[in-house]
Amino acid sequence: MKNIILCGFMGCGKSTIGRIMSKKADLSFVDMDRYIEEKQNMTVAEIFEKYGEEGFRDLEHEACLELSQREDQVIAAGGGTLTFKRNIDALKSSGRIIFIDVSYENLCERLKRDTRRPLLQVENRNERIKELLEKRLPIYRGAASIIVNGNFSSRVVAYNILGIIR
Ligand code: S3P
Image 1 (cartoon, protein in one colour):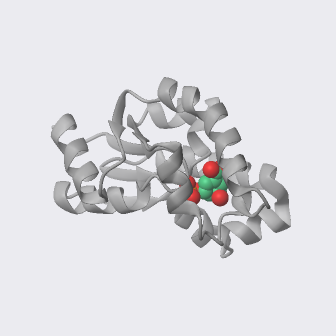
Image 2 (image 1 turned 60 degrees about the vertical axis):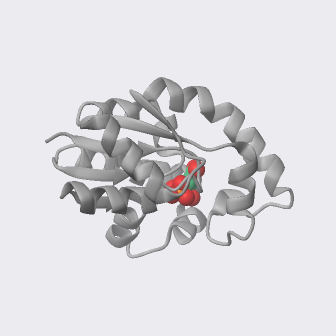
Image 3 (image 1 turned 90 degrees about the horizontal axis):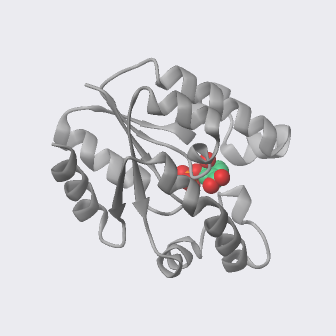
């Protein structure tokens, strides 16, 4: 079976939803950030610090190329992954891209205590979320073949997606 690739903003629930889906559909689950971290033996924050965002984006692209060679996976992409054409091209060829759409207000609420995402460690976090979200929304929408409402519990969203793709 082709892969199922979950995309959406940080905090939209990609990893939790992906895990639930993979168990239910008997597919393997790959969290792209964890995949990169394990390969580098560093956290995403450490990678950003050592190599900068650009260095992280190259490792992320490498991960897209590798994972797109495999099948039967639910892949939780990083929040920035599907905003790059080279990653969209690689992942699209390996499966279906699903955008989990969560409102700005819910994202702010879900991300308000985050300490591990480098892009959000700024003074005005909600402003940063707004800027990034405005820039990324049309790209997520363009990349995905399915868009789901992510403003529900992870379980509900996971079952909704499974219902749509079956
Ligand atoms: C990023 C999202 C993060 C991680 C990195 C950059 C982004 O993944 O890849 O911090 O650019 O939105 P999550 O969406 O899993 O938090």
